[in-house]
Image (tube, rainbow, N blue to C red; front, side, top):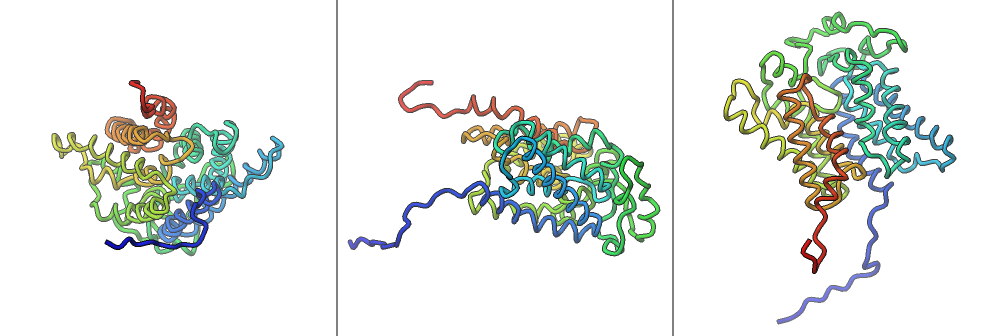
Length: 343
């Protein structure tokens, strides 16, 4: 038997990617989703994304200056927060409200806890939760995807003046000549009208909803890029999707006329975006092997519980924030046993 010897030049040991390298690759993974959101909803989403990201960057720099810390904009974390936050907002969301969301995400979700690496909750979801409570009408105003005039004009509510009531979008929608638009997301159609959108439309992104939550296919592809580069714990999104599917399955089998199928649960709303890019936040999630699975399963379970029996059609945001809060406990009870000890 002849042994095969491989000769390679140095370096033989490679260091792990730095924080800014990981963050930069997350931005790369998010860019196709942002591009599809702009293609789907037009100018309003483009300007809203720029506004939210600029607000996050400006707030980050402001708190660097107030605290006397070095400039941290180069670590890309504020850009990620801004992109994720913008993707969770409706296309018709007023720009000034988007700026408020960006400020809140960085100020309360990140700077208040001491900056990057110390935040307990996902900052983007903190900003989203704040504007959900502060602007309930604007956060639930939906507009049709692929409207013919989306690249020629803004949705009227986009340019609403600060602290003024945004104009209604019904007349604008009528001018777009969009057929069968109900003014509701697929989740809202199911919860309040009992209507189920077909799975392919949900998977491919041919529906309305928040700017970046519509195409499960694209989100999975972008997440796979990060997983293959080992810049994301794939166990968390896998466990979250598994937890949601297993929770929904028995109810669907028992009463399919009342409860949606696991396929609908997985591909609708913000579940896919939350599982791949938000629940997997390295700071706010556990690091133990068992903890990753417990954490993901818990969030998936809570998402379905809120969707099925909560007052709102969507539950991903609150489920992830609750999972963030439980992360220290999950990590403490899932520590690996030390070799040679019984406990």
